[in-house]
Image: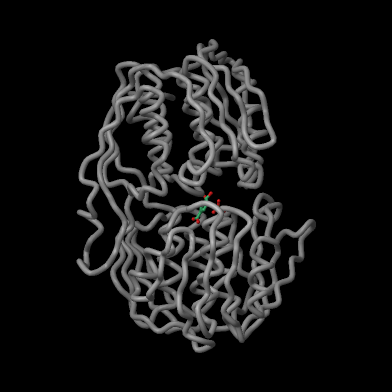
Length: 446
Ligand code: S3P
């Protein structure tokens, strides 16, 4: 999403208080899609009513579901296992998750459908889903340049596959598992590294048996008639990736303390907490045991709780290997932590950052440098020399990437002068209310 909007962020050494962040984006997409496919009514509480997930809800309507919404409380009456042929192109906006996961479900439908998105989404790789979906029997055309969207899918008559994914991507895994619902036989995805397992959990939540055996995830398909499950009540916890910005800002500022309540604490999402501990922050987690989400005791659901981070000053660390998928969306703000830490922080094995909403290695390196931080860009990460003076009185560009815009806002708190951040409207794709929280936690920042 590209806009000409901008915002000035003032220095603010104390970042303290208690907040609740909006609903988890990954979970909201998944429950919206499964509710669209269910028989009967689903009620979703805590849904992320941000642009990305609203686009997914709209697609569900175009595919035949009926949707009503009051704040973050959403009701969906699903289509009962198969979608209706869409009368228009499905616009997934800025969301790779929306497009790649829905591609899996569309591959199971006996009709031709087309998905598109904004400039950012139309520059992201889609061959990673074309390959497995075509192995299953769908025809997938990538109508953009260099294997990008728009995506046209002729679905139906799928067969089960065992797919060894070359990328550690929850989106690819989920796409194949969703398509597998419409195949005969057992579909298996083998991941190179463990990625977030929300799809496995929400599928179990609908009663679809999913087997997880280390890096092998399998499900038995229902064939071309599609899966039959009833709508249900879903609870979406706060998004850990939104909480992350404030947790890092508090950690980097001695004497600050931020508490985030009702936040999702799935271990495949919370590696940032381990990183912050290594860097010297005090991290306290309470109520981790399914206490809020476990509305139906027989359903394996997401851990939820409260996190408090207290700042003690940060020291450098190294981040790489299996940890990367468990903090992939937090790496821009981890780079900010590195800039504010003593010593050289190294991020490696993270080349996937180059194909996110922007090239997050290049965009972050540029943003950090603009504020006087020494950073060495690597093909798969960066090396950040921390504790330089953060020079404000300048401008940076998010390149329309929501996580870069919010990460740069965090770094700006530590600058010697205000910083103007360009292209901040993209924050609405994941974190409506971000600026209100900024005001609340910094006292005032306008
Ligand atoms: C997501 C998975 C991740 C993440 C994205 C959301 C998901 O992408 O970066 O923001 O909801 O499955 P990849 O799985 O492609 O790394």
